[in-house]
Picture 1 (cartoon, one colour):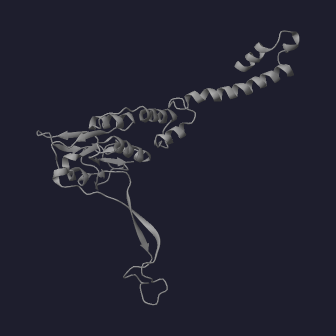
Picture 2 (picture 1 turned 180 degrees about the vertical axis):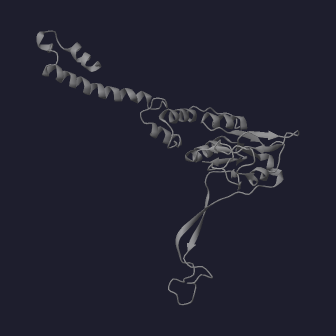
Picture 3 (picture 1 turned 90 degrees about the vertical axis):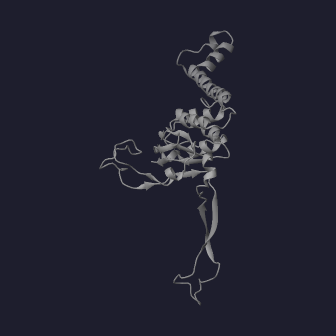
Length: 265
């Protein structure tokens, strides 16, 4: 070990300073050397503290750069995603740039510009869970026995900002309830027991704004005019939902809205 060799090197010459192998004296010096090596190794790691590939405090560095790791991500995957965030360069927030960021983070999605513009409701409000001869989001055929193989419509999602909530009082008694009677001790106007949070949801804007909406999903097809006619639903791991949205919010053009054609599974 390094520190033991240092100890031996600085000892004076003489038989008294040359312990017999495996003697108590020799073992004592080995212990001193091992203790010093442990301190040296910890100090040596400090030079890598801001290196995403070698940092000994990975979770602290992730927190500093607002990277939320997936519960199922391996150590190597966490370090790669952290490095992507740390070493990103200033660049124009284009759809191509956003797509590259999503794919480099491990999301198998594509970004599609709504140009020429079509009504986003075609994809946001009229997507089906499966169609005849199709492949369901999990990657299997649409056939009996598959957990995802059921008829139904699924809506897309407009991603505009981060999570925004409206707060409302949770009133203990409201009109037409059984206890809403004169004389009831709990029947007090304006009485509430907690605050109820409801997330802000956005409606599809008028047609003048449709070109400012882009889509994130799977493969897409366009007609002869270049208009989007179909966007496949892309599967996203539910534990990476927040990470997926944060990347889009971080890199999308500020004035644009993202229409997510995805399913979380």
